[in-house]
Image 1: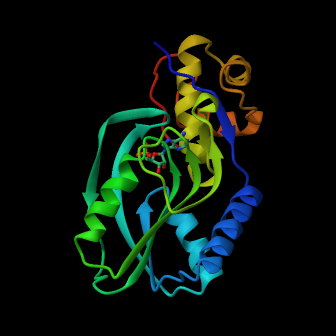
Image 2: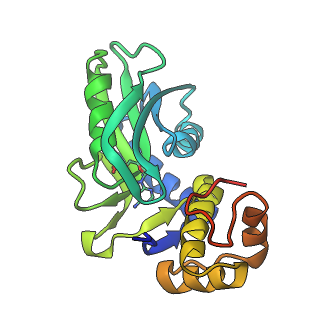
Length: 213
Ligand code: AMP
């Protein structure tokens, strides 16, 4: 089966707005963190934006793996790299881009809690409301019935390459892939972007695995 989920491309302007909203809420709760922990890879950019907005100098990371490639869960979420520094006695905010199943953030929270922070809160730019974990802060909620794969700016080429390769398995050729992506995923990908992908990934239908250009 070829998996071409409905997608929505998030813009940098939206990302900045979501980060602004979360930063405002954190300040309103008088909950300024001393350390931000990025849940990588998705939480890396949002974490840095929040450091900037909240004046936080200390940025650590923890790595979870769950969704192997675009919209394909790779089984259970796993914490693959532990917390990169000490947080004992500190006020900590752990940040991801989106909570979908919520497994990644809930694993990260459990792991960080064991390091003894004085206060531990969480934030995600977007929150799908079927998630088993509800972050302390989120900028926008997506109802479960409206589930989409969000193509964040930091995952654009990876997502386009994966989706284009899947579309090529159904309808080979750049123009056919472009039309299939619009019809099945709702994404309008500029032709030059697909040409760039085609330099590294076969869009002639020979393979279903994409590689970022
Ligand atoms: P989860 O453990 O299901 O809450 O999600 C783990 C990670 O997978 C998120 O931090 C995102 O980077 C990615 N992810 C999950 N669902 C989506 C989605 N609907 N759109 C974009 N990325 C997603």
